[in-house]
Structures are given as C-alpha cells and as structure tokens.
Amino acid sequence: MDASSPNLPNLLGTWAALFRRSRLLARRLGWSSRWIGHLARVVGVQRLRPHPLDVLLVFALVNLLGYWYWRDHLNAQSMWLDLWPNFVVDLFSVWLVARIVEAYLTSREEMRDVALRTRGSMNFTMQRANDLLPEPYPGAIRALRDETGWMRTNADRRDLPLNDYLRGVLRIGAQQLDDINSGADALRRALLEVERTDGSLNDALDEAHEADKSHPARWDLQSLERLSRAWRISRDQESEKASADVQVAVDAVREESSQHTLAAPAAHALSAHLAAIEVATDRRMELVNKVGLYTAFVRELDGTILREAAKGR
Image 1 (cartoon, rainbow, N blue to C red):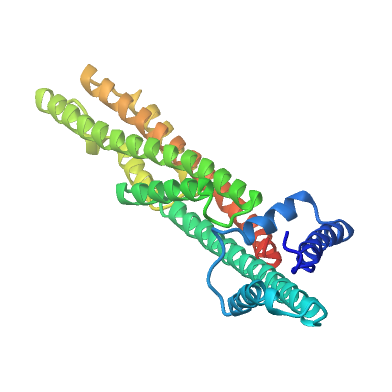
Image 2 (tube, helix red, strand yellow):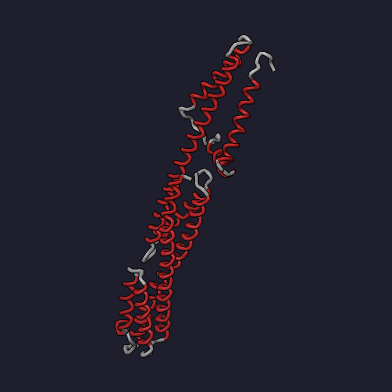
C-alpha cells in the first residue's frame, strides 16, 4: 500500500467497525434474522430506485475520487489527510442510513397497500360468490372462476410484498372458492336436469292422455301444479323454508300419483322429475352453505387484514 496514504486503512477500519456496531445494535434491538433478511431485501439492488438522497452518494464518491487523486499532493502533516477520509465515511454513512430508512418506510407502505388490496379482493370475491345464488348463471360461474385463478396466482407471486399470513389467506380463500365453483357447477347441472325431466314428463303425460282419455293429464294432478309453483318460488330464494316447501310439495305429488294408475312411461318420467327436483334442492342448499362459510371467512378476516395493513408488515 502507498506510504503516502496512511489513512486508507483507517477508512476501511472505520467501515468495518460501523458494520460490527450495526450488527450489535440489531441484536440489542431484538431484531430477528427474519427482520434482518427483510431489511436486506428492502435495500437490495432489485428494490433500490433512484432517489434525491442519492445526491449524497454522488457527493461522497466525488470526494473519494478527489481524495485518491490529491493524497499524493498533500503534505504528510496536512490535517486534510485525517479530515478528508472521515468526511467521506460520514457522507457514506448518512446516505446508507437514510436509504435504509427510506426504503424500509416505502416497503411498509407498499405492504399496507397490498394488504388493503387483498381485503378489497376478498370482499369482491365474496360478492361474486353471492351472485351465484339463488341460481348460478354461466357468466357468474366464469367470473368467480377467473377471480379464483387470479387469487391463487397472486398468492404465489414473489414480486408482491405479501407476508406469509396474507399469502395463506389467499390460498385458503382460493381453496374455498374452488369448492363454491364445484358446487355451482353441480347445481347448474341439476337445474338443467330438472328442466329436461319436466319436458319429458309433459310429453309422457300428453301421450298417455291422448292414448287414453281416462289417463290423468298434467292439469289433473293438482299437487304437481303446486310443486311447480313452489319450485319457481324456491329458484328466487335460497332459504331453508323454500327448500322445505319444495320437499313437502314433492311428497304430496308422490302421494297423489299413487292414487292414480299412470302409464309406465308417465310414471317413470314423474319419478325422474321428482328425483331431479330433490337433487337440485340439495345442491342449492349445499351451495348456500358453502357461500355462507366463505362470507363468514371473509368478514372475520376483514378486521385482521386491516390490522396487518396498519402494521405495514
């Protein structure tokens, strides 16, 4: 090393001492290795963006280059050989501390924004899930499935400042929405089966009545008409009472039909139609329960996510 630069070891030694003191300070403050790693990521190259504070860094670099250039031209007894390196170290230290604080505060703000967006996303998916009731239309099913996909994608994205808690919330929410989507698909198929069997029942009763005028037509089965009304009402509601009314009407149809001698095709069509209505009613109540569980899950998380946002972690 050049003899004319006696303060360069002091410069390096000062930086080493500053690093050791920062680690000691971290231990005294009780920072865990997780927090230290978090700060390292915050001030990492990928997170470092240009900032007005970087003027200090430029000024420090200019002074460092000036020191390297002028150290050979200074008198060995010049006070600048002591002051200049210390001044450079001070500039670097001020810049580094300021950048750590600024980047950490920025990271907390970003995490707060992500937590609030997560809360908004959860509430939006809750509304989408409730849109499936009382009848899941294909557009509503596709919309919820798309939201579920985005939720799962965001939970796995490493570029989002999400902590483990929020990632877990998104994964659990996506899992519950998958169950809701499956339930909505099952209910949709059951509703289509009710419509198909209703048409088959009408055709079978009409054919039987045309072949034998003594055979009861659809309008002769009054309980069947009451069932149709109860079914239409239940399709506009998702209450247990509406489902119970449908089941009562189904039992009444079975009782009344047993008092008539129906042709085999008509009897088979009636049995299939009643079974389809019962399956659809069960599928609707299953979907109601799943949506209710997800709604309770989101509402329970609402306050927790807000607390996470307030912490900014």
